[in-house]
Length: 116
Length: 110
Image 1 (spheres, rainbow over the protein chains, first blue to last red):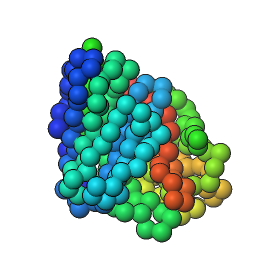
Image 2 (cartoon, rainbow over the protein chains, first blue to last red):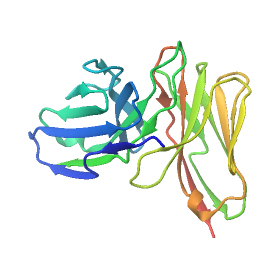
Image 3 (spheres, helix red, strand yellow):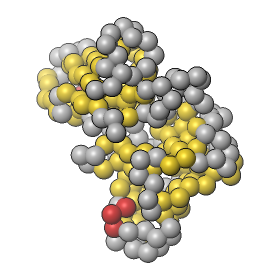
Image 4 (cartoon, rainbow over the protein chains, first blue to last red):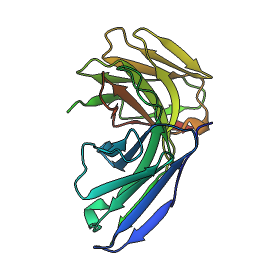
């Protein structure tokens, strides 16, 4: 079974703090993704990576950065946390796309971040 | 950007009833996924569909990739209390990332 783990289930941070969210997958997947999930807005893609040291912006990258130093690990960084970044953050991984078709994504349990 | 619509937004059913929900798009997709999410947890993949017209089952769940490639359907037969949760669809077009629907919230009454 695919396993995607996230470093924390719950985090509470103060405005202006630097926040690191870590994600690890054990299935040798090339693609990794970070989403945030908010009521009424669904899942929105922040960043994704298709290889080590590679990153691509998603739909809402502002205020975030990412790091992928190893294939199995993808980190999301909030350089200076703000209250509007309070959300559920979900990491996912998948095999690399073959041609035009994407493979299914597998999600971690999520990190609920509260910024006060 | 692309958007997916899910119907219904929420539903209350009696245990033992069958459930139907759908997902529609204004764009053509070549992959459809269905996920279930329990409160406070990440989405769990239920079914993946890769071909127009494809019908795939996973236990009591059956999903179909619409012939028009703009919709997909999920059916749950003989619902049980643990079916409670939010069901998401996700669609993907050539070379693009997945787009997720807003979800259908299912409640099962004993």
